[in-house]
Image (cartoon, rainbow, N blue to C red; front, side, top):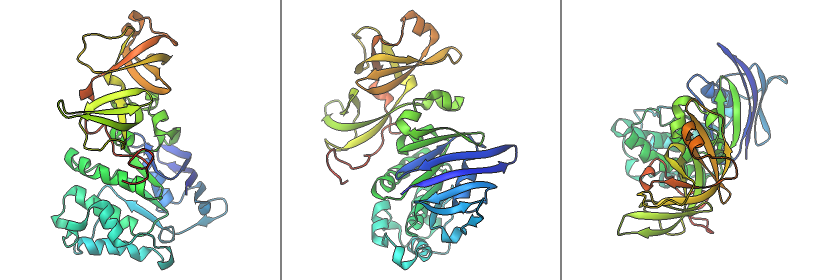
Length: 374
C-alpha cells in the first residue's frame, strides 16, 4: 500500500507545491518550522482542501481538485496522531482505545484490542484515566486508538515534540514496532534529525513548501546541504547492522555491517538481531595511514568517494567503505593538509562513545537476520 501526493495550495507567504509517494514503512516529512509539513498531512487527512492536485491511497482517489473529488475526512479511514494525545479525559484507557473502532467498518477491522495492547505495552494502563498517565503513555494510547480504527494510513504530526528526552526514549521503540509489525504506511512529520534517522525508511525533505529531496533515508541523510544549518551537526550516515557478539568484560557490543565492525556500548539484543545505527558526520575522523595508539576502537578502511562544496570553514567528505557510505565533516584546512581527493585510500575513525541511545535504533524489518519475528 502507498500514498501518492501531488498538491498545490496557497499558504500565506508561499505556495505549497509538493509531489511524493509514501510507501509501506515510515515516511518522514522533514523540514524546519513553517516549511508546510503539517499543511501537507492536513490535506491528506481531509482537514484542508487544496487548490489544485490529487491525493490517492493505494490507487483510490481521495482528492482530485480538477475533477471535483473530495472524500470527507470521516470516510478516508486515516489515523491521525497529534502532538498532544487528545484523549477523552472522562474515559479510561480501554474506553479511549475502543472508541477508535467506531471509525472502522466491521468488514474492514484488522487489529483486535488485545493485539494493539500488546504491541504498545498498554496492558497495565487499561483501567487508568488520562490524568494518571505520563506524556509518553498518553501518546502510546493515542497511537493505539488510531490503529484500532483500522486505518489505511497513519499520520503523525510531531508526536514527540511535547515530550522530554526520557519520555521520547520510552515511546520510540513502540513507534519502531508499529513501523515494522504493521503494513500501514506512516507519514511522520518532524524537524528532528535524530528521530528521522532512527525511524524513517523513506525521507522527504520539505523547504518553503517544496520537496527538496525524497528517497531512502540512508541516501537522503548523507545530503547535509539539504538540512537546516542547526540540524547539520546531527546528520551523517544511517547503516543497517547485525549484532555479532558482546564483550561482557568491557560492556561493549560488536555490530557487523558491510562497512566493517562497529564496537558500541552494550545493547541488550542477542546475536543475529538487526539494528539501525546513525554515524554522525561530526564524529568521524579521517586518517590517511592506519592509525596507531588511538583510544578510538572503530577504524574502517575506505576510499574517498566525493568532497562536497565548502560550507564556510568546513566541507563534507563521503567515504566508500565496501559499498557503504560514511560522511565526515572536516575543516577545509584538514582536507588540504591531508591532500584528500576522490580515490584516495583512507581510514574512518569513530569513537565507541559517539554511539548513544539516540543513535542506535531497534531491529528493522525482522528482528533476526534471516528470520521474521521479534
